[in-house]
Amino acid sequence: MIRLRAIPERLQQSLIALVAGMALGAAFAPLAWWPLAMLSPAVLMQLWSRSTPRRAAWLGFCYSFGTFSVGTYWLYVSIHVFGQAPVWMALALMLGLVCIMALYYAALGHVIARWLPTHGVAGFLVAMPAAWLRRTARSRISTAPDAPPLRARAHRRPT
Image 1 (cartoon, rainbow, N blue to C red):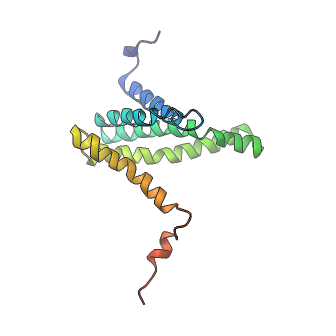
Image 2: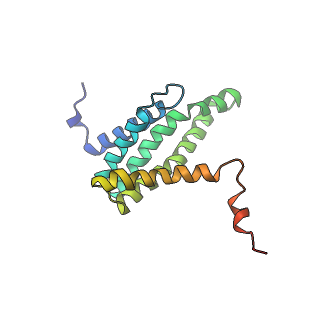
């Protein structure tokens, strides 16, 4: 049996963030354990509330690395099986994509720990979820299939 006291606290927090991120991946299809979609981000926000900006960035990276590595397993199948790429190439491409996507949560953790209130009701019920959802709403709006590109809207001149 592993004693938690033998594992350094920073490593414990990183592992908790990684496992919580993997749990978020299980909240979606095919498992669809939907309560994890509410519990998993709460674990991350609790870890962020006690962290320095640098540490919060690392925990955000660990969390989303777990989320995206579990949630994008199908990329391995697409690249290796259907694309007939070697295993090492499929894993390298998948790892690269997961790390790039994890950078957003690293940045979000840094911003939350540095500039937003992380203690009390204001932090947990307003600031953290607002920062979390800002990116989601922005990506949904900017990638809508029927919306004209943002660049096209910005260059229109009144006649």
